[in-house]
Image (cartoon, rainbow, N blue to C red; front, side, top):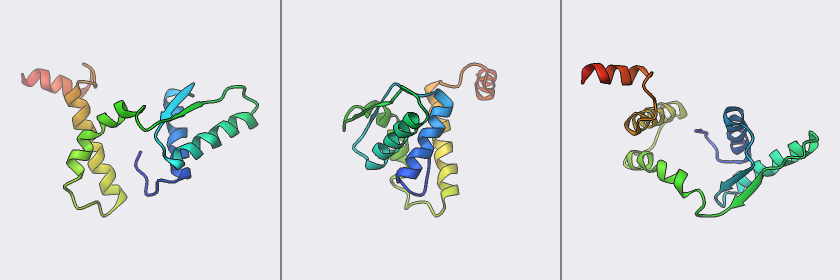
Length: 123
């Protein structure tokens, strides 16, 4: 998720969006970011206030999320030579295009996607 600020509010918005997509995790590995830590503390406090017995266990480690970070290498490699983005909208459009190309290259779209159908007809 792209955001103008990497603060607690942005981390909490991302966390709520992720939970809406995949559900509440039992545990999560994060880096040493204070914003992510604060977002998980807010989430656990909200769960406690709502009367839930469930809490998200947070592992703070510099290396536990390396597998996820490795997937972003392609984006970092392409964006680094650029001088930066002027607007959040142009950054989002560029990053979405890079991510889509990477997803297609990794074969994660499945056989029913329009690109896979087009590629099979073109071959």
